[in-house]
Image 1 (cartoon, rainbow, N blue to C red):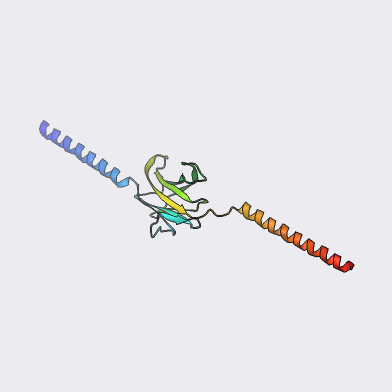
Image 2 (cartoon, rainbow, N blue to C red):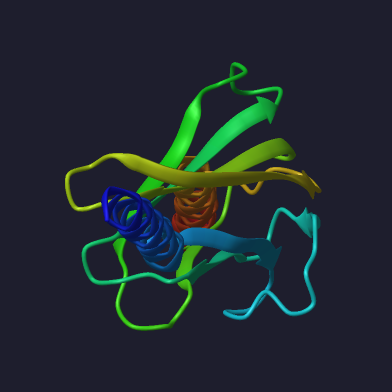
Length: 175
């Protein structure tokens, strides 16, 4: 009788342990894929972009729930105008349904950038992370203030030119 009770007790513990382990494996969310591209689906997946391109980072999450969130970070790796490790941008995305999490961004300078995606639970605990590197080529786009200064210089030149013409006209009227 004691042997049967001990055997039943051991079997019950094994069933409980197997069920608990199985439940944990079923409910753990993971980042199944992180891809980069020029559209919302990152299809085709790319790692090289032009400075004028809009860049999408897309993370597909397996077994996610509304209690999960994904934190994107874009970090300068080899960018002449930035120090290695400088954070270029961040975005926190609350996950809803089975839709992938997306980050749409552009950068001001060519170079190598690292994009990190970190999956967190409702208490902020890190569950999973993935990262990848992209290369951006081309010439930096002019800053708006530089364009504004150029436009102001053009206007000034135009005004000076107009003033010279007026002076000539006045001189010819005097003759």
